[in-house]
Length: 208
Image (cartoon, rainbow, N blue to C red; front, side, top):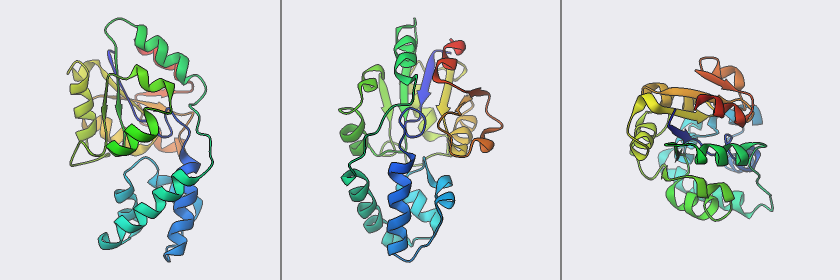
């Protein structure tokens, strides 16, 4: 593999509780009572898509989304990369001909404000596709196809690394291999059809 395309949340950085716990409490304020377990399938997709799946009317989504993100980033929470991510990305970055790309459900402003300046690993990525950059989002293939173009443009050289079924569906819809980041998967049983099941980030080095 030459193009390693990565999801961020739940794959490289440990953010599930950061997003889902505030979502659950804010939804309850607006009359949508769901359990923490029921929020897990919403992790890793855009906020608008998540609220739509819950049944929030389109006219109400932006206000709830704004409230959600305000709470998310007001938390005094330290967000870490998963163990082994930093070293693995450094080794991949040093490999001949390899490109590292991000394909995330974060919008561009969030990516540039909350990821690039706050995480040292941002320096390893030569390109990024955010939810602001494609009309359709995961599980549609559009973000992954854009990620391939950010690399060398060859699907056969590309693998998408993610932690959710929507990541896997997007990769397969784009015609590339999918590597399941089992260390961050909230619902690992849904990744049974992953082409590669990774128990540790260093397993990616075997795909070179």
